[in-house]
Image (cartoon, rainbow, N blue to C red; front, side):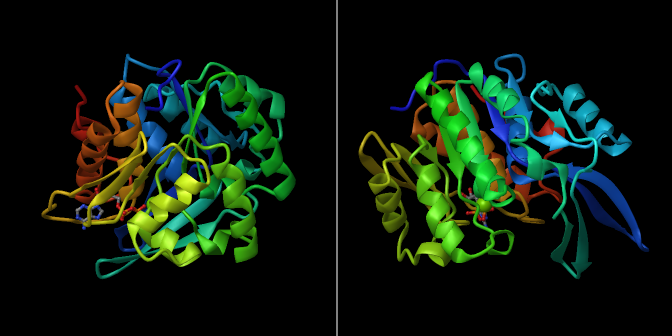
Length: 309
Ligand SMILES: Nc1ncnc2c1ncn2[C@@H]1O[C@H](COP(=O)(O)OP(=O)(O)O)[C@@H](O)[C@H]1O
Ligand SMILES: [Mg+2]
């Protein structure tokens, strides 16, 4: 079983300013982003038991200041955030058409795209971590040369005993081409200990015909532990060379599935950092995502964070 030299973790990626509709053309400002949502939930779940950092790059403006202050207030390690004098955070706006939500992004020039600009800071941030988490979105937003800087930092951290978790979260629109996806994903899988893909994404990119196909592909790429999420369907897990299929409990009153996968990752990784087995971690992931999809937005109110034994 994949084990950890420390339960401290760092998640790497982009958080954006979120504008969520409140009616009559009014919007509420928040912050969200896949690896950020995951880090934030883990920080709440492991409060007082582990240090959780979010490694990103933001601006030097007041909204970026507010973001960093909110994270610090919520108990995250913000020492791993760097600042860009010229750029600001990316932004997205949610539009509602009945219950359907569509997302409009302004993120092409976000500060987070330069998150490897200070490669030394990144390597240092990874230094004490037992686990480093990233996603395909983290990779998609980086210029190719900067991906190499990130890969080098991950390889060095792994050589020093850190584990790496990866959620492919493939968003074709963020990538320059499907060829870029097909070339980059194997590179990161070679550095990954725990993979947390969603079956839908993998079907679209690789043509998998079953979650077992997905497990087999990740195993062949050298990933030791894999949990394939599949919406309301069962979660398929590979750990210690064994495959298990764990049913997903029915969830009533689903309001907004945004962030379901990020919430699952948070529950799963929190449980694993506490030394629980992959099977127990799937249950934790399902509890987190069940809460997330019963609420609007990708992050839960703090009082509703499931507690972990
Ligand atoms: N309709 C649903 N019913 C019950 N659980 C769900 C449902 N949709 C998502 N989930 C939970 O959220 C997890 C992640 O959902 P999924 O849709 O596979 O990921 P993503 O949000 O990355 O596309 C699932 O493993 C499951 O635990
Ligand atoms: Mg996902």
